[in-house]
Image (tube, rainbow, N blue to C red):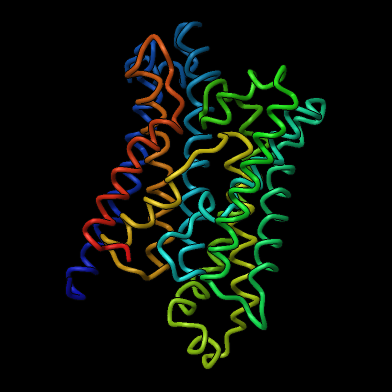
Length: 331
């Protein structure tokens, strides 16, 4: 791909991506167990719709679509930032243990301390944050190595998964209520969930803009970045912590949704290149589009049951990832 083709793709992507976000959002509002036309949705927004349609759109579908947009944006941004900081396309909050740390904290909160469920986003962030720091310290040896961080993260991921299973076995009588959350999904999410998740998500997404320049410089290699006056270790740590905030915000409401942070940045990178000025915002829009689309499909195509979106994304993401691996375009 020459420079002119890449620039053309970038310009076109910034036009198409917002349109796709709008289209999948409309799709999420119109389709489900009850189909509601665009005219009827417009009537609801104008306070002229039927009470039934108003209840479905305003109380069920609209908050779910908005949460899906934020969850997808957070997961894709977290994955894109980690891949840049680690210089490794396999880096992802689900792979290196960040999501598992947030997941364990959320499971403990929901099962053992349900009276503090309103603190779920904070608990998930703290779990991801502490896990990130622990992984970073394990990988530290007169400096951090991206490879060591990933290897330590994989081991911690397995350990935290075992701890989560242990909590579920000990409190087996309380597990049923969180099984959909463990599978990853947006079922039953409401304005309440949006209200306590949105501040963390929006702050994280806003701060991610500050990481565009460091992410670009880290891709040049640690030595080159240091020669350019960059504090490599500090920047890598800040990126990991920001990724923890983003992953924790997503995990707190959507559960363990995987592959978004891994696949979306890959697809965008193949399309427009590695420049984070374009890669990060397009990954955010791509992640938002993917999660809302997958969630709408999961709840409308398998009627009368609702498939957790995490299962659908795993079913779609794993083959796509293997296809990319086979084509040798991610290594």
